[in-house]
Image (cartoon, rainbow, N blue to C red; front, side):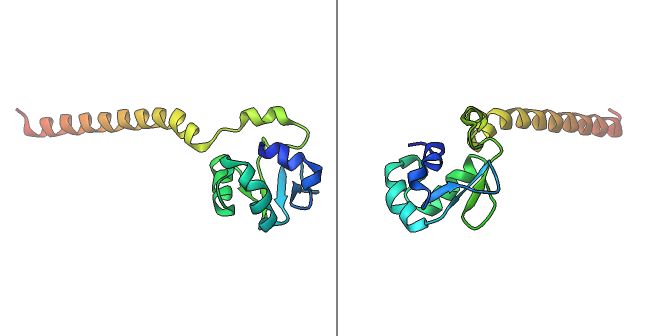
Length: 124
């Protein structure tokens, strides 16, 4: 079961639900019941609440309150926005490589300039 479906499931509102003040956050009301009733059925969330929170962070969720979490693309009644959610590892793999290449190119350019200055100073 996906997190969006779980948060949308009104039979679980005593455990986890959308927050009243926001359409893009949810709150875990009963952590012990969440850990015994929901986590075992959803392996991708982790084995305990700490791992669940780590998974949320990995997917870009922000901690809003003690057990409240939000994401701009995790919005009540707008499940199509879930496609925009990118786990940080995938984001790092895609854009991190480009950033690294750009940094490497800048370092190489500085190194070449340094060699040219050294050669000019030697006047060989």
